[in-house]
Length: 346
Image (cartoon, rainbow, N blue to C red; front, side, top):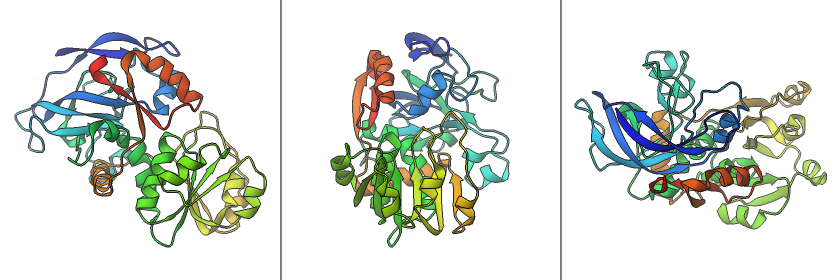
């Protein structure tokens, strides 16, 4: 066991505070990672505040982890000391179900082990990236290509793969019209990735406040959803809509923007249930879908794609003691577009 410094929430809705946690000794197939940067995801706030249900405390959040390997177990074949690596939203899965065998570990039918607020197969709670070090099985670690700086790579481990996976699955590319709802931590990555894939990209945001940013990041068009005429003008326009927002939407209104056979895919997860008139999908053979992160293989593919296209997250690097302030700023949409903790300040 190794004792490391971390920032943890001692109880639901409590401010995060500096503490220490124990990391397990390196096992046969484990790698010990010196964490350099950890992104702050809106889902960290949901879980610290029990917005998605009962959680495990004390909680060390963080599933956008970038660092350097400092030790490897004797059976490790994929990584060596000094390698630049990342860890995303999960650190284990059953490895035996159909989904795991297909490289879809995020949909493990026996339940994967989340990087934090989870319970490992050893029965111990998992703790995330707001810490100095982490020990992870090599099969749930990805390589950060040399072309990506670790600070801008960290948010790719959640925000990047969460948007890349549905864009790939629904075949965003040349000739496809893709809309991104919300230009935040997830949305700004969806815009960059959809643009790099060759799609025609539109941002749908509450206001035009971030229009200049959206166009700079790769959007071809930018519309305010607070303008009632937007939904009239864009009716039947899109092949694919990626909704990145965590607030409940009028799903019928957004489904009206799809072409026949179009898909509205939710990657943002509101805390409240939403309702839907089924005629919104019946008319036009439309799909209302969801998507959750990506498998390990696809996450590596995404990182390699980002390196090849010069894509990183737009970040604001903060010191660890600023984390509670950063949470409030995320809730106020006062970040462009992802906070990243410099873990050397923990």
